Each structure stands twice: as structure tokens, then as C-alpha cells.
Image: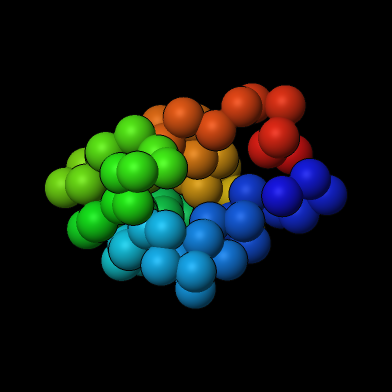
Length: 88
């Protein structure tokens, strides 16, 4: 996990079936200065390895979509119980 952006870590965990989630993105504000809102809706978690946060939703806003994705992914990873030092 070290060295990866939080969103890629979360994405890889979904590929490994450790978590199942759905992502939503919304653009807010004026076209010349949009703000992105990214939601992650957690559907299922491998509870043998992580805290059960199934049915929870998390969101963040940022000026760039990638920044919002990384911020909300970090929030989800922390909720799962990952060590903050393992998350970039």
C-alpha cells in the first residue's frame, strides 16, 4: 500500500474482493471554478480482515476530481482500520 495514492489502494482492495463499493461523482459550482463531490457507498467488507463499515457512505469535496477521490478513499481506509502511516 505504501507509495500508492489512497484511491488506488481502495481500488486494488476491491479487485481483491476485500471491499465492495460504488462511487458517485458530482460537479458543483460555476463552470469556471467547479468543485467536485465524490461519494463512496460501501456495500460489503471482508470482516475477517477489516472493520465492518458495510452500508456506510463517505464523501469529500475538492477543486479537482482526483483530489476528492483520494480524500474520500483515505477516509474509507481509515474507517476500515488501516494504520494511518500506511496511507499516503
